[in-house]
Length: 262
Image (cartoon, rainbow, N blue to C red):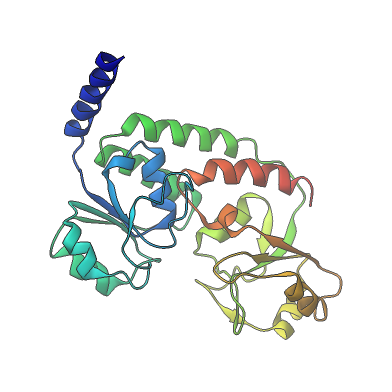
């Protein structure tokens, strides 16, 4: 038994030595989960406090702050050889500082296709190309199973006070589009502010209240219903619509079933 354990340890050390990076920090929750699912748990030395998946593997990875307020001194103390960031989730000024000390890879993901490209690119860069291909293959297969449903007009809320929704150059918008959900704010960029009077004038069939970043609750449904009495209003898990990476597999399985039952 001892010989088997030693042999496995030697194999593990050989694999680790062949990987191009040994000390990775992720500033992107979706991509922290992806790194672990790619088999790089031992190489991930830092994460943000919003990196919460996979729940059973994340707790022993050191927290280095948030996505918008990373603790730069702490990051530099850990001496990473690779940092993964995102154009939208992380601040440009933080990225520029970190780039002067180590390699920083900045992802830019606005569509499902962008996400698949980034999974493949990270797989190649980090020496886990086969694992990345498997994830991409599973996601692609699930995309081919998206149900063919009638179009519904939709608004997707991410914040309150002020009310904020999603525009046409966001990952969420692309997910909605793939499920034949026409974004009534789709003629605007990024994350437009709005109000309930404007929402009522757009008269969507369906209003989705995300669990993140603002934690919408049942009480908010009643507030919106006063302005949009006819629309269906649903609380939804924001991870299914906004987390790219390996979580896309779970998300698409859920979305394929959910869209058929709205």
